[in-house]
Length: 424
Ligand code: 7TS
Image (cartoon, rainbow, N blue to C red):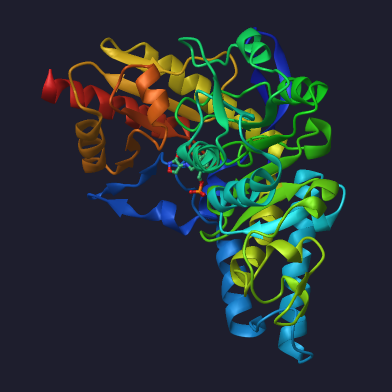
């Protein structure tokens, strides 16, 4: 990936040199961006739901399926050894992507949802009991609420919720006040999918650790946008999904500190997660295999590795800076429209712009925009408590990736104006 160097005007007026991404060249890597929808060029602004896949990742899938496929970790034949080598190489790419200490701390799952459920079953069921408290935040996705609710119901544990202000920022004083001797776990998103808020997770993790409480970070919306360092964050668990990171569906990652993973119970039983089995007794495999029962999504893991290579080729810090520019531009343009309210105005945000058009149901917004080839998501974004907090049934949400452009944001703004002309 070529990076162009350009001089640009800084926000505060001073000139400074920054490395600027060559967007046209990047867009050419994504075949799907050439599609026409409703006779118009596709404007894909639903990246928080799932991002698109560049050609090198598609090529990697074709190469794997046409030249490398076999089941892994079992046979001595050429293809099985090759597939195993590539699968384990993908694990090491994820390790470096997260800056984890060891590759055995990386578990492949089906996605963020399965990663969180794995922690709930493997850690929660063993170490959280009656009367214990689990802290969550008010801006979680359902996949970081429902598993903990299921555990609380099973064990008689209690969920405590960190509230947020009207901007969608967590109230840190109230967070700190929730801790007591019964607090046993903190499950927190890094970036909110409905509001875009970037939570101060590093500070919150440090506070939880001060009380001896382990922390799971739901990184589904952070991994595609921020450079990550799980050792710097010092989180105990970190979960993300491949399909939001230019990889395929059906693959995700759970990072866990080795000493915690080692004391956890397996999530599922089956092949590959055992060392020996008799009808009387099973000895489990070492981590990470203890948590990877059955044939894993081999192709998807290898493709996730290729997606990580692709993103590294651009550079996560450049992606972060460019997407900030896009979000600032979109925020400025959309907030200048009369009758439009942005929902989620935190000082620190990433790649998400949720809004409502007064007098128009969000689903109608999505339908009209689709007529112009513009893809956004409308609904509760699997974050119904967030909708309840902001007293809206749903929002319209544009979410950005590094292959989006300001011209596409202009089309979104034109689309919103068109909706207003039709409905108001
Ligand atoms: N956590 C967060 C913060 C998410 O945004 C999502 C998916 C998940 C967990 C679940 O990820 P999965 O890959 O296991 O499904 N979020 C969205 C979204 O915002 N629109 O569609 C899916």
